[in-house]
Image 1 (cartoon, rainbow, N blue to C red):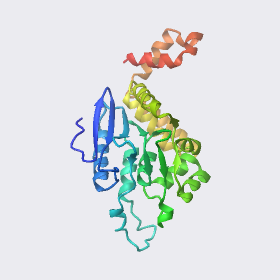
Image 2: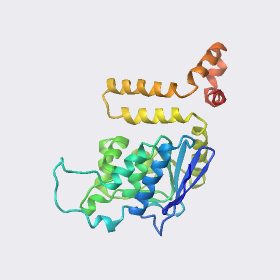
Image 3: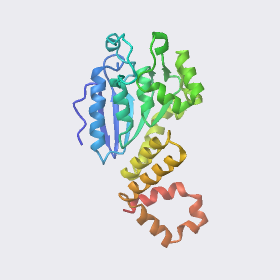
Image 4: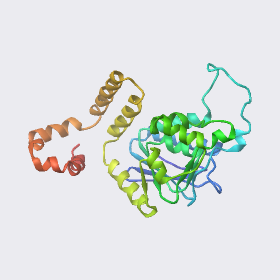
Length: 281
């Protein structure tokens, strides 16, 4: 799969890992150009079974992705619409499409991510932030609107209701440690730690079967807002999507024939064993 001709970022692919580096103007503004690029990127990722992990970072040392382009916001309608007539906004559609790509997606946050930029990060699977560099904000309430890139919906799922409302209604900056406390990121790291940490995580995930990565991801997203009985059915469905396309059963058969599960030493080192069986196809 070729990842080229983007205007707002560059993509480099190596060993099953795609690295997307935003580099657009002075602040990586989230306008039509970026949304078009992200939509095109998602389309390619949906068809790519060799790439397993996508890391999103910025070439700008101060900005990850800026807020939504005010040149577009100023043209918003001032007329109220009914629920039936409400249509998804471009940013909502693009973020939703990006959230569903079959790869594991990681935001490597080393600068500001406010408004729409933060909402894009929330649409990715995992987020890691550098202390002293990362700041996020949802400023929309102060402008007279609300987070409209899926931010309100995804934040409530990520943090819980009270913390989501604290973030949205305060319209203030939060740093990496606050983000970890609130639950909007996976982990806060020192600036010199974030690169090696994200790289090691991506390399580990990239060793696993693409079909299993996708099945795990889709199952988690599908089940999060379902009643438990429906969620369990979704879990069973995605399990068999994985076993039909991966060497899982073959690996279990070998383990059973060799009696590996009864060896106490194997129980102590599952983290290593799970990587070793990737050679069994």
